[in-house]
Image (tube, rainbow, N blue to C red):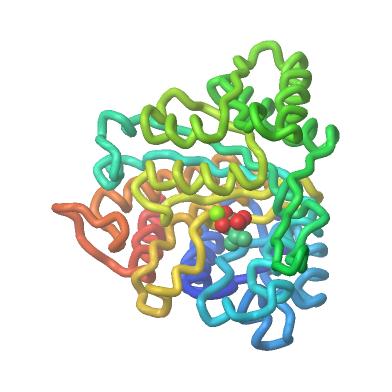
Length: 358
Ligand code: IPM
Ligand code: MG
């Protein structure tokens, strides 16, 4: 048995509900792979603000740095929107990503089983689509300086900076190519090189890094076109690498192709430990009603087992259990004719039942 420390930060909205189900799955699967877990829980986001006046208390940050992996639910909600920018729940999440140096965010958009009918796109367009978005996560316009709102010529002006250094581009490009090598060896780099100098550099460096990966077929696409192509013909993509903000936007589009934002897990890697979180947010409109879809969170546990602990089989086991569960059961966001509608807790239990039969 090896022992690993996991920090759990359920966060806000539906975060705690979906996290609870994911933890059950983690606790069931881990021991089968000789993995012993030490779990601890700390606040992040709005709940942390309410308790301590900051969305990311030092204690949470320290615990995150000292753990082998972090499992995060979701942050944010209307309750905290009026707060000053510097203490908004989202700042907590961004600080975690940057302090842990998690510069690569992997967001796989896969159509699980017959969920093909839950997509708003035609089945023949999405059936078989399998896209991995590799999003740069600790740079770009999300973190660039200068930033702020100030008075210029008697009026308020808001500004942010899109900045990428060569080394930042090189390391995320490398992750993109490495992931592509494990997939269909097709990488699309998304930029806006026709308008933004920083992404003209992006294109140049990605091309350069590509020389070390001659087997990977590299192409470049402008972000606006990429948004259109994900909806027009998602099957043309295998692996996509892109900037922080384009990745944020395009991964939501890719998620919806799979039927629901409630299905997309993510892994943030690059630092010494990884962080795993669903792509969906805190969904305040349905929180506390047992309506949330816990599958993105459960699949995030799978990604943790794969990327932090090298347990590919454990991830596959979880994915198969999810596919099997979907044959019969659905949460509201992916409900379809002939299926049984269940809530968040029961969805977790159904996945567990299948795992326990294995
Ligand atoms: C995401 C979210 C976050 C982001 C928010 C909550 C800060 O939209 O993980 O995609 O913009 O990165
Ligand atoms: Mg987003």
